[in-house]
Image 1 (tube, helix red, strand yellow):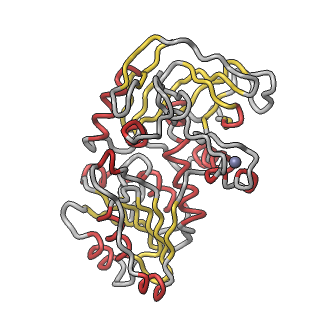
Image 2 (cartoon, rainbow, N blue to C red):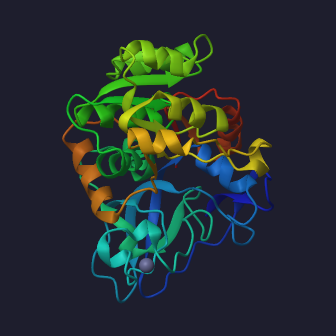
Length: 347
Ligand SMILES: [Zn+2]
């Protein structure tokens, strides 16, 4: 089969002919139809330890069809359309058994990093990681549900607890996950203040429902939030950039009982600077502030994300598609901040 293969830390992915994966008793073989491409892959391939061995086929956001199942598999059948939960979890520990499997005590890493992923015609995956995909959702849109649409669901509902009327600041609102967080925060009833560095991205974000847009190239983020909230600050922040600068500006922008939710991570190995930030404990105490880390979603939440897309309440935003062999070009465009929303490989 054709696949884009990574041979070394930070290296490019290259087109190769490799053997089709052979499945074990609890696995499924998926014919990949589309794979989302986001900064997750760029960061992963440049961060020591994330890819567990080489050669490795990246790609964590996939949609496709099941074409073969192992002897023990009961949850999917040949011909099923599916998307994929990309955390390799034990399904047995106390976190897995309580709907918090992203904190699995025996975490095995991510699809596309600890095992081969979706930059290929076929992919082997534990069948229990697969989630049914209804006919109504095309494969390209479906591929990015796995991460870009689903991650904001957990962040908005469980971590930021966005409710009707809440002022919600989304930092990195024009990126692959941020653009869906804007829609999700609106769906939860929030008034969304969307911040990004590019007017082109912010215009699309406004079309998708953002109430206010903040161009961080032209204005000071915390001052603008203060102005837009009549000095009160916001109830919740979803920070997808999570640099020292955005986290400190976000912390300053929180109102009383505000929730700061961190979703992004900028590894020093890739971005050449530490993303640590300063927090004044007196402010945390006095305002009753909460700081949350939001890790992906449970399988139950992924099923919910698919349902929300089927209902038309969230639109998956894939602005550009590319053939498999152009994956490395997409990585370049992402690093240059030139992709609005998500890009996808059509396979
Ligand atoms: Zn577990």
